[in-house]
Length: 347
Image (cartoon, rainbow, N blue to C red; front, side, top):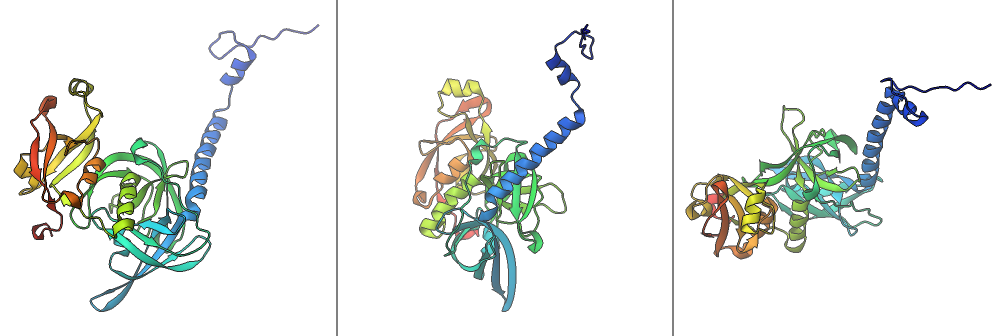
């Protein structure tokens, strides 16, 4: 005669067979599976973007002395356009690119933009694999990211981490603030500059640009949405002509009540963090703490939106700004006259 066995859970309640197995699951097995999933995500991202990553070597001459430097970059079009950092190739007499299959080819400088520390070079070679570009506007703090580059000459090194913060600002080579910077704890070292920061799908979401030394875990990348716009300008014109209003800004979310009351089409604006003395913004009456939500009758939902409006075509024009001040009060439009970045006093 068969005996009937009663399965009891750890809390003493009667349960079915499926639930008992769930209770008795080995914690070590669960932890191992989680680590395996993390490893697989990193491996997939690295293998997806890896063939697009290149090592960039440059020759420079400064004060009559020849120098050498290196950095990273990644192919982003099938016809050989490569994104990297401005500080990697700026002032270089010759640029060479080494692909993952070992081919070493010379590269043409298309243009560089010190204001965003971005640059584009181009190679003429067959069978190139461009990277897939993601959307930095969809990123979230805590998201897994993978960085690939050539630190200290060690080619195609992979590091992983998370997005530590979004919307940071860094001062570029020319003194202009680079907004909407991605902060990550994925290890970056000299030589990583210009390499891709990718998500778990292997899509490029940033261009690695800087590390704060001797601090550990403070590494930064330029958002790919910014890089796409700059790269397009460099390919079309060889440079980015900009106008200037004299503010440093950060993308912020607007209170829902303000969005509803003002019937705004977007839920974000640009918080003014600093106003440069003597700038068009100061002369127009802009203050720290103001939120820019419109520029020349165009909605401004993020810092990149504002940067895109500061083109060379607007130089000398009077532009109306739509501004929110304290407690969501909408000001009468402020008018400022846009000036070129290249003014002598800006150098």
